[in-house]
Image (cartoon, rainbow, N blue to C red; front, side, top):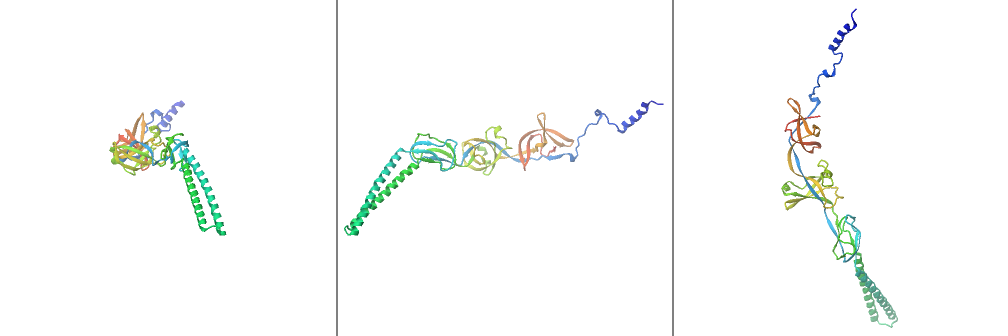
Length: 352
């Protein structure tokens, strides 16, 4: 009888040759890269023109800044607003008092009392003359004279009341009213200040806020009304203002035709500046022309050890090339990243 291991060895060898048992991992063949068209998508790199954006600072301005002026001369008794206060049209922001007006008003009221007494006396004389005329004791001329005196006294009373109304109105005009809705910028007076009629009590920014740009003269030919600009977040540092991708859109509404000191001025209309300070600066990107770029989708870029790579379809197969990236932008709503070096017009980029 033959030993059992002698009969098992040929069976084991046959099973290994037939592939019934797996090989060890270190003897497995290496994996191959599948290059079939169903396994990847290609992006054709083409040169395209994009707007060239220039980062500048814009200052927040108000369409209109109106002064709230004193209507009478006198002493500032009370100031009811401070810098930054929100006011509505007609709000009382200060009170100017002229002590002479109180004396003038007292004199006017005393004059009215005196004339009212004369008016009552003239009325009594007119009634008496009419009664005597009815009894045939007095003449018609006496009645006419009494009536004339009564009319004169009545007109004097009306004139005195009108004079008192003028004084009362001047007292009312001591209240300095806000000429429009807006925010108080400056209050150059304090309680106790002596002012004249027409002096500025406060300056109020009443118009819509906009951005004023001051650009170098070399960009003047490329700036036009209706052009689009991008406005960063509040602040002047890149950390607070953000990037151009997150900036909001604005529109150039006016380009001034005069160049002063080598600078051209332009106004930008943008919403959401109501809580900004007047003359506050913010970062703005403005279009100054076009430039040709090569761009790929951001998903096509991989970073290894701090180096950016893009895989292209070469004749010998996929090939990773090192690239230097530029700014990001959107093309028809799709994100793109600019490639400064490493690619050529017509390259086919392998997308993941």
